[in-house]
Image (cartoon, rainbow, N blue to C red; front, top):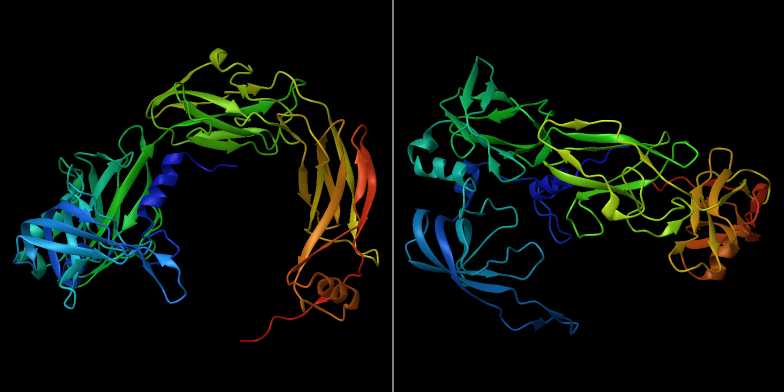
Length: 477
């Protein structure tokens, strides 16, 4: 099981346009599209901001009135004659909140009624306080009007989200021939005057790095290795691909119990040796053979901990344990990783485990037929401080279940499922249970079993109080 390192998640979030419930968009426009679509394009500094008083809607609910920002205009590429302009946001979760002192390249729309500007939810508006932010855009804008009369493919190469990669070859393959360009001091590449057609853009990886994600200005971000259709370049148009590199690193090994058996589903965290955040910057859980791997880990000195939360549970019946197998953080072995480094066989041995018991059985309907892929759980009546005795699983294709629980607990074994009214045909007992709860979906339960986990249990049976029923066919739309 591999989830990757935190930086991959950060890249995804930064490249995924407008990650918010109130809005969505297909992706960022290319630079020339953004320029054409904007009412105004200019460089400016946010001098001051105001927050109007909150308002009430027709239902009396209070909502944000947004923001008013005053921006000093410094350089105009399109659509502004004033030296100061006003921006107004409506207060939605997708509106960009401007901060005093920000130095930005604005792509803005203009509202004639209020005589104010606004930044769209998927705008290319970006900070230009430090390279390489906005450099690709500025190269195009500064080359106008000639740049608008031809074709252009461009992009930026960054490592660890912020560091420009200089002098890296980028290969651009088109319908007639292939081209090679190199990134400049800001990690930007560009090429003009390409014949219209579809192009594939690829880049080499510098030593110790690998491409994590690529962001396409013609519609969102995707895996860097996925360009099956290429970039479509039309006459007098532009397109772009930004490449984001991670460290080509890995730390891998296995987790073993005190008897030498591999431990599955043990979750590990990796953190800088001086990190105080108890959640850690990255996490992995072992597979069925007890294997784990952290990849794309930025260079640094790290420690690895299993069960970082420290709560002794049925799945992790041990306290926080540090590599190579100690309970005290100060005794942990520090692992140093550099770009291109691969540390293998970094096995973590848990010194001791709390005693556990196994609960196995069958979940069936009232007519004896197995219940497939439904939840079975054990919940203790009480546990000691620092312990979590709950356990849960899903039944298999034969309705069987198996739970590992901490020894010495008193609690209940339960099974439940959520059912909608009308979901099953000709099932009066089930319909009666749903109506009795007065809501849909209703949670229906098998009769629970009281258990003392001082021994293993086999051949237990949980029974739902209704027979198996045939699901109704989905309504045709």
